[in-house]
Length: 256
Image 1: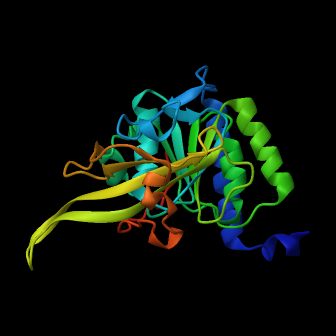
Image 2: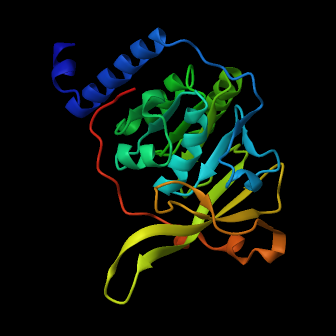
């Protein structure tokens, strides 16, 4: 038994310790199950979904855009709800705050390694909205268990991955970026306009909005009219064109 302990992967031992501390912290937090059927979106993004918000207890796939993740977390945190980001070490706290995320209600688990699913499952006990970037594939049985837990706890999960998530409610992605502020050989990047497109089970016809994500204040701002169906050519843009803003400073610690 002693040899087994000495030969264990030190990195996995550290991550297991992080998960244990996370569970201990969660036991000290009041369970916060939403009594509302929706998590409202920012007004500029609300036209994406027919209900104007994310379904409580559902899973949504996301394109790997830090700005999109921040914009979706901001609305929940500004209304007093806890939110979390798992497996996103390049997600910067300054950018999150700039998008309106209340950092006092944010839990970060930047590098859970292979234990990302355990961290997500533990957080779902008390956190109404979680964004996660998986580092490995999940088995069908694991998906079913997590889905049941999310529904029971009233937790909404945002999965930032190019791979489709089984049993998801839909997918939201940012694409066709256009940066503003640069002239010919001069200027500073001030704002980025992107098209955000959503397609869900409740709304199978894609809906798109053109927004500044971010604008020159770091916030979300509407930049165009809502479009649906065949009129939206961007809705069929391939994932290869998904916007990936420059990486934000790396985070090292797990915090609340």
